[in-house]
Length: 342
Ligand code: GLN
Image (cartoon, rainbow, N blue to C red; front, side, top):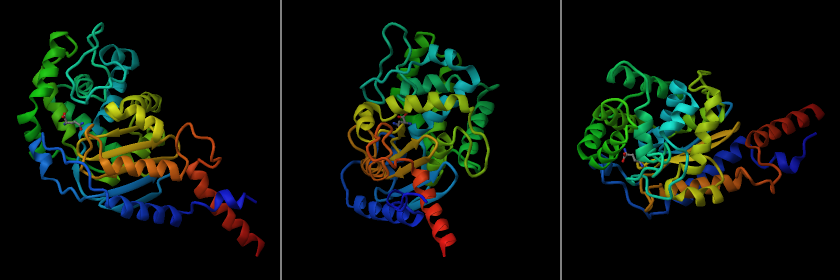
């Protein structure tokens, strides 16, 4: 018989009610500011707020605005990195984009002094370089490959929000400046405006909080969508993606995030955050108001609370029951054992 004290703590209903209470508690957090440097993003309702968990075996827990669609923004960078790795392999990609955290803002115009590479695929410079590695015969084929990749992660068709894409393209001179600097150092092969276009399009892909949780759960499930069973990325590259998320995914908050939450994660100026508990769980939060580093205020708070409640910090062994799925399964086993007894 399983240990009742550790196994009864988090039933499916208890997880749902914990998330509902957390949603209610964090809805009172009104700090932060919606991103407005891309005019289209400024139009979002700041009160939208969703939390969604998807387990590595496909169970879904959703609270609040989890079906509302918004643009994925920087969260796309993780998945495009995966596709670039599939297209070229680890060594080639590493030759073009480093894996070092910068400690600088996501849009900083800096390259590694010695190698001229952008520091990592999670800051804008690195993401543009990564996008420029996507294979395809011309812009349409590249975009289609990218959309197809997102489709495998979310489990349904996916579109680009044209208004956001046009808005980014019209106001993206900072990104343009970085891209031209990289071209100067011969770090981008094809037409720079085409590479930027694809980057703006990937940032403008529409997702819901539930989609993001499914994408995170796919990474938790070693690259296979836990609901459709579709392989979204070669399992061998999930490790690469998660390590870069862990060290660089939250920009210049990455160190404190790793310390406090202890999970690989990625944020975007849309107000979304994903976090991955390998082999167990994908977490997504959507709440548009951002802190000074460009991370969702409520998103950070929610992830910290979930990590703490379920003992998910990767290096936390003190709670002794930090396998999320085991906590759920443990209760089922307990009920079966009780039923057998009577
Ligand atoms: N499209 C945005 C940009 O390039 C993405 C930034 C982000 O989400 N941090 O500025």
